[in-house]
Length: 296
Image (cartoon, rainbow, N blue to C red):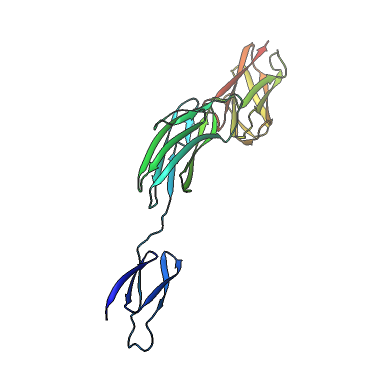
């Protein structure tokens, strides 16, 4: 019997001289076939052996990005971007975009991409890289410099190519300080006062932003000429050595106000100044307000 190799529809067939092979269908990259064996009057028949010589193309992009969790007002930070061809075929016309997205909005805030490697087109909060071709396993790495005044921002990176490959990643940074998110005010209800007379100090904190702030903490420091007696307000306090420390207020929503009151007694004459200190999660330095009181 004479044997021969016959290639039909991209597969390699080992058949007998009398076999007739026809293409049937493709499933999971293996071509199934029907084999018409030789007539029954012949003594023997060989079975067909199928070997695939094609592999399915897999277009896959993999993007990652890293940035610091916390930064300080107007201080630049580095964002590191990695783009990889994770498929098994070369990619063409690869485009990458990095965008700085505000998660909290503050009046007159400043946030922008100031520099990026790889010669991208930069427009304020958006950087665009036109990479072109990306070979199998090839990796591109870029750094971008971003700066912000205050608030929480997301740096989002998307990548796509001809043929439909797509990937997306993001990282987030919180900038502390720099925006007047909280307004601190302190007034006295009676001024001037005489020795042994009492007055109230009213402390108000207003959230001026469109985002909530957390752990609002207020302390008031009194001079020796006037003594704090008791307090009332949204949280309790501790009075020690002419210093009033209020426990933190957990969450202050946008455009909301919280109030504390301190009752104090004049001890001796003088032109006095009360200091009120404010801190919160969005502040990395204290805000300080003074209120003057004359005692006769």
